[in-house]
Amino acid sequence: MAATAIISCFALPSKFRNLSLNASSSSMLLSPSSSTLRSLSFSSNVSVSAFSNGCLSISKAQRPFRYSVVCEAAPKKADSAAKRARQAEKRRVYNKARKSEIKTRMKKVMEALDDLKKKPEAQSEEVLPIEKLIAEAFSVIDKAVKVGTLHRNTAARRKSRLARRKKAVEIHHGWYTPASPAAA
Image (cartoon, rainbow, N blue to C red; front, side):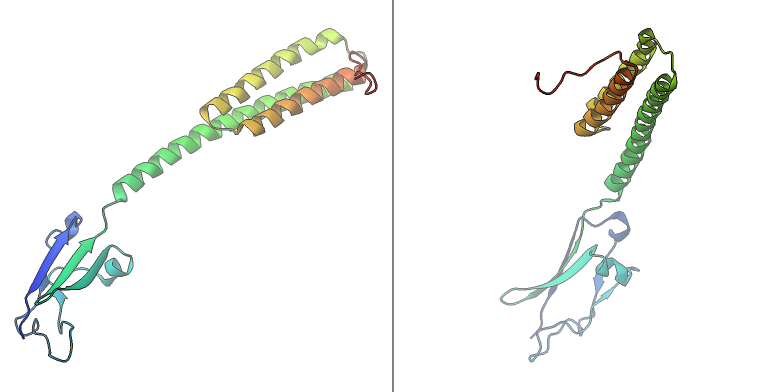
């Protein structure tokens, strides 16, 4: 019983465009006891790794009086993956710069507050330049949240940390007295 082999290759990448299956007429014959093709080979250099990586798959489709060999290739994703990698690197550098700026501003505020706390004869007016530094730090933190660099809860925690440290310095020098819990 002679069978015809129909080969269809869809959406193959450019290096597989000339892919075809070679089979001699004797190799396309099916044995009566077996329903498999005896010999099947590629005319172009295609490595076995292309099949094992899932790039290509060959399957035999059985129809009433003929057998078809279907050769399919996965759609090409190398270009989109490369673009994603470029975009991710660009965002990583941008986010790293923003986070670094946040850390630097927070460190400046913390150092200024520590210096003020260590000063024995500090005046309440010396807090004003530190409040400007805190306002700048808050602004940078809020902008980082707006563009998606920081999560809003992380931003809230960092802003709270700065505000608590400022309040601790004010309490230490007696410029601020917290309300008693009984009054609230």
